Image (cartoon, rainbow, N blue to C red; front, side, top):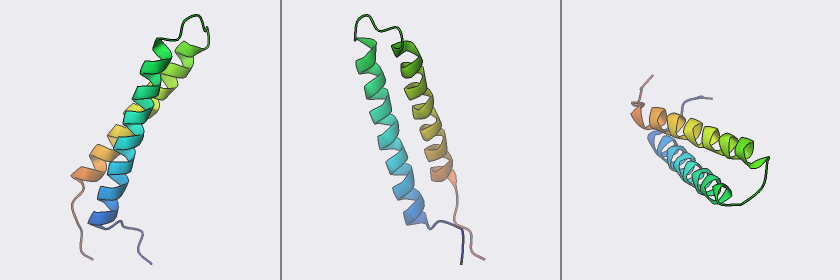
Length: 69
């Protein structure tokens, strides 16, 4: 069994990661406008870090070339 992703699988996974990143950024933006919660800055930071990580992985997946063994 091969552990490599096909080009279609990589594209689908990268697209999903990009949607998740956009969603996480949207949640972070919404939390920024909620007044008075002391815990929100840490939660916002976590959402932003996860969004950044998802974008990095998606970018790496999109840059990967097909390999034939």
